[in-house]
Length: 293
Image (cartoon, rainbow, N blue to C red; front, side, top):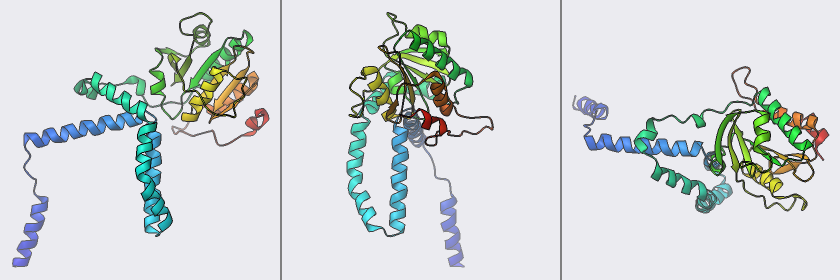
């Protein structure tokens, strides 16, 4: 009987609700806000890609521990500390920007406010691709330099903030007007997201790749640079020759014809016809083999 009572008391102890004071509630609220802000920051920056890489390393470490893979476990344990330091160095601009935003924002208002610019990404429509192709062809004819970045999975918010907000519906006339010579917005890149032109005159990172031809200028190096740090697709129109190029995955494909441009952008288009998202870029398809040099 005594054993039964002790067991009951034990389970009643764990099932009992502890008393909570105002300080406990305040503590939970503060921690919840911090977790929410950190999660939102990770989602809206390239840190989300880093987080996925860390999760993959943790999974590999668990498999190595279960399967007694001592060499892999040793490598992961000895490189984890260096990896954290390297991640802080690589994402130093994002961390600095996050601290600056934290100092500027009102945390209570920001918690209950909705940010429409961070809505869930949708696939590029046929109309958007047609407008981009039409503008690119027209600018190529008159040798108007252009740099159009199409955001995909990796957010480009840090580069968007370097430009001037536009947030306009996609149209070929607007793109041509933005890149027209001697206009305030012609210098820099245009970032496209969710079928809208979100920002113009954006600064992009320049690529240090030695594989880029010396004849290519800053515009082309910027296109390759943004493709090295994200999964974006960037369209370039040369101001000297009027040639059309596309940069993706750290590589640039030059001398595209209008039809080849349409073929490549058709690969970028995501299909939402059945309510699910498919990635259509799976290596090189037949069209890519024809236009690759």
